[in-house]
Image (tube, rainbow, N blue to C red; front, side, top):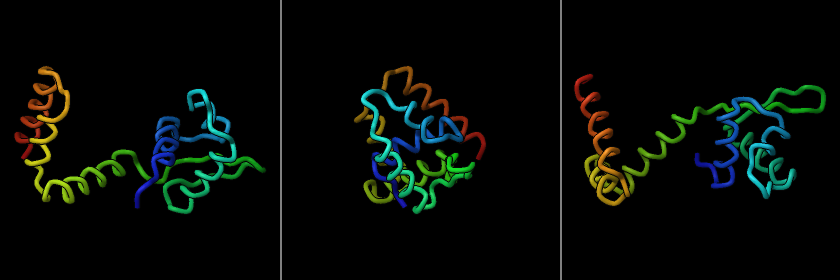
Length: 121
């Protein structure tokens, strides 16, 4: 299941904070901050989708993620490779290295990462 862009933004704040009350999440947003009702709606939807849950303290809810950031984005990158690059990691890597504005240093770091993974296998 995928999150909407506004839900992903909220989820990023929650991943950073690890646990948060509504006021903490609102404070994490830059100005202009979204309305409290908007955040409440997003939290309700994300709870329904199984991405987050909360602990109730009286009338206050402390929210926490049920899905790890790495797992969420890994699933979507793999889906991107499957649907847009014919399930070819090589095609994806070729596109990524040619069509993004990576510096020589970043490309060298990428090569070093790949070399380390090759040695592990």
